[in-house]
Amino acid sequence: MRSKISLAVSIFAIFLICAGAALPANAAPAEDACALLTQAQVSAALGIPVGAGTYVTPTYVKTCTFSVSGDSAKSVSAVTISYQSADGYAAAKGFMEQAKARTTVENNKDAGKFQNDTASGIGDDAFYTSMGTGYTGLLLKKGNVSLKIAIYGNLPAEKKKDVEKTLALQALAKI
Image 1: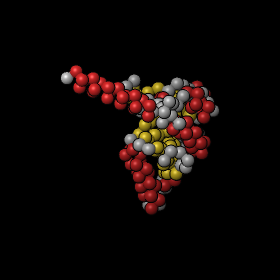
Image 2 (image 1 turned 180 degrees about the vertical axis):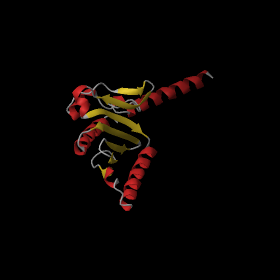
Image 3 (image 1 turned 120 degrees about the horizontal axis):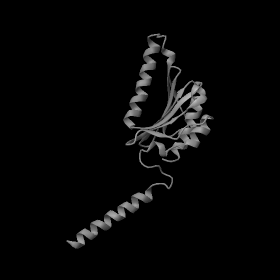
Image 4 (image 1 turned 180 degrees about the horizontal axis):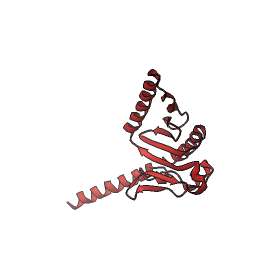
């Protein structure tokens, strides 16, 4: 009996060592969104100071928010990075394509509000989504990991896209 327990402990220890060795040295903790970007990275990409990343609640770490205060908040109020499920990524992409197609077919005056542009050079697949003037987000997928980076505020859409791409590439380096 003692040898079976020793064998089980040895196998478990080997598993832990191998699992740890398989992770890159700079890997972020699993689904801890604030571990993907630093306050300095977000501030540099935006060109304005942001606060430290915070969680929605202390126990929900899949979304990290970098808030902007003072005069800078007139152009940007916050930047978020969130882990998304692979199914959620596919559903969001499909929804945006359907919404854009529907408004275009119906000659709807809101057709231009739905933007769904491919984003090249980011992970395995990525796209920008915009709804109106206040929201532009970048959704991306790398392997079985999916992220969303969004800037909330009144920056021009192209500026938001540039910043989101910069932040996405920095975050992906930790995955």
